Length: 139
Image (tube, rainbow, N blue to C red; front, side, top):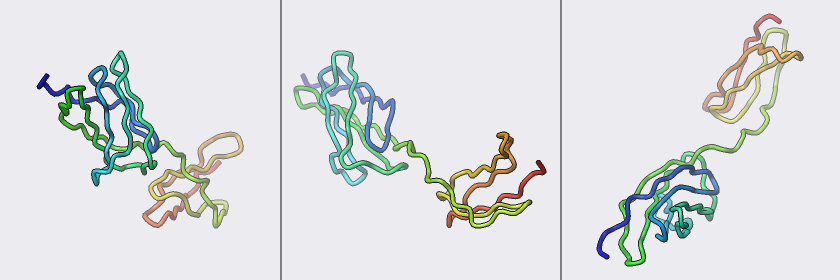
């Protein structure tokens, strides 16, 4: 056998796990961007695989996945990006007036202020320092 397996597919890549499909019985390997092996698994009888990453990766990290068959033929690599599956920490409120709420939150997260009845009073995206300022709509 001198034929390499098809390039594996990735259906999900989180901070802790990569799943997808590859040639049945092939060894699927996940690499960090620096080439470090993060985990391996054997594709099952349906070609499915699930690999637990060690160490965990951060959201936005680039990963490479390959499949190697029993004859040692390696597939082309596929690249995937780790999804952000972790909710941000609760935002802090440093000031709340009748018209404005300010504070800090995870950089790039969307902060929403709700009235007690669930009505949205305003939203803002936390800036590059995590700061936000929301001008409230009249209730």
